[in-house]
Image (cartoon, rainbow, N blue to C red; front, side, top):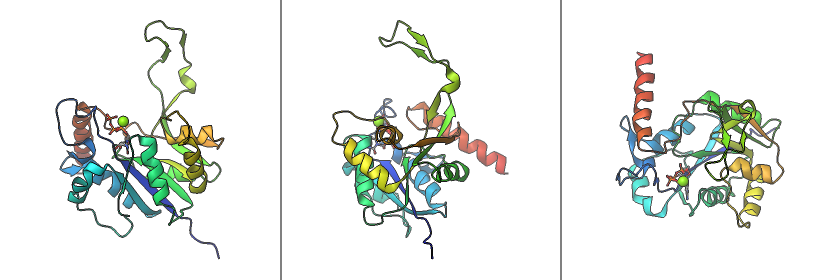
Amino acid sequence: MTRARSIAAIVVAAGKGERASANGESLPKQYRSVHGIPVLTRTIKALLALPDVTFVQPVIHPDHADLYAGLGLDDERLLPPVMGGATRQSSVLEGLKALGRQRPDYVLIQDAARPFIGAELVAGVVAGLADHEGALPAVPVTDTIKRAPDGVNIVATEDRRVLFAAQTPQGFRYPQIFSAHMRASTLPREFTDDAAIAEWAGLRVALTPGNTSNIKITHPEDFARAERMIAGAQSMET
Ligand code: CTP
Ligand code: MG
């Protein structure tokens, strides 16, 4: 008998959201509401809405335990939060360690600050894992990209046709990404996403279709954009 494939999702929410608070806002961005619902609640509920996701493991900042409890999230597939680290990379590693008991087949690593993930986008990532060890949603780059190491003098214009912007959730086979993250944590350098760690470890990582509406709330103005996106989606439903 074959056991059903298990898929865990880690939601990294242990950041301070400093750029989004540049306007003096004191509440960290993942706890601020968009259309009445906190960003982190939206992200976790979007994952719990997917029947294939067996567990969701939140990773939070130690100073945010009360804020997290205040979300009032309760679901049998939602694991108790674990505390993150000083960098996104170390927060992901804490989430991977916490899943050591569940030992899922696949893990999806999701930014709390990306509440607009849809079922189709996630299904594409999971499908990508059938023949790759990692898969992530990405969209073609639309701007022309200049290479200028000193920030002024252009040394090259990149070929945009081969460039893609990475999103989350990034999916991996759990034992492989756990081992890659453990090894990466001993290096003096930081990686900017989990796929970069997988690539460094020699895993085969594929791009799957991303979505331009899968934005990461980063700056204060992104809240207005997120509000408009939800208002637009609701007016299309009615
Ligand atoms: N994150 C984390 N642990 C950290 C840093 C970031 O779990 N030490 C999470 C954030 O909570 C966020 C995701 O990683 O959901 C992507 O990071 P980013 O958008 O950069 O969020 P922040 O680091 O919180 O924001 P900023 O860089 O503006 O301070
Ligand atoms: Mg950050």
